[in-house]
Figure 1 (spheres, one colour):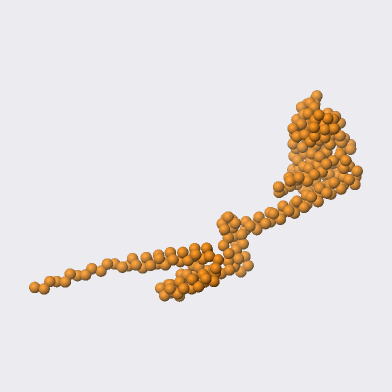
Figure 2 (cartoon, rainbow, N blue to C red; figure 1 turned 120 degrees about the horizontal axis):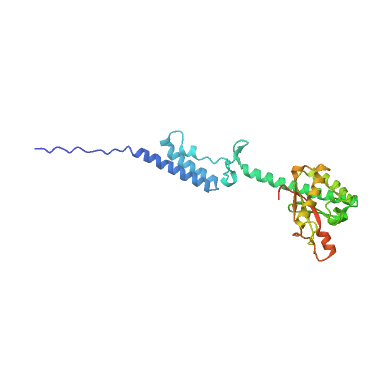
Length: 263
């Protein structure tokens, strides 16, 4: 009696297709990573061509390599340089321009232009004071934060007074024109020496004197009030020693500070 042949089982081989597709995509990914890491484009083109030939037989006319990898003439912009938008294409689309990079360049240029403008304004103020023979009692300096104009107490107020002298009005009239032209934030700071004032504290005295100068600049010369504020320092920021009469005179002062937009 003949034995019946056992029916041979055939395993399902459908899993091979998605597996091969996955391997193809992984290989394409590695090629992309390779392309981004290499700078020799000529060798990469040869490499891409060889793999394109291999996969074209199973991917049809649209090669995975050809679709995924395209060096062209574009350049990769790092995320920290490209900003949230990742950059934008310009011209023919072959170059990627970093938006944040352009903004940074514009900011640097604006700062340089402002520095030049402030330096020119400082020279104009000094020249105007010299021409009017008023430069002896006013110090004009350009610092990292802006223009500092220091008016000595001898031309501002009588001792213990908060009323502007007639002489200082001429100084303020001359200075105010340049302040208005610059159109920047202005701080008026009052300072005193270390001698206690009999009628009020040195803090109150320095604040009152700063307010008087501010009122004149805004109410008489037309400086924009939204651009002006005051500070009071009493005797905490002396320019000279308080041990001499000359030093105390220098310390009793009002400073007009025209601040830069960029520091």
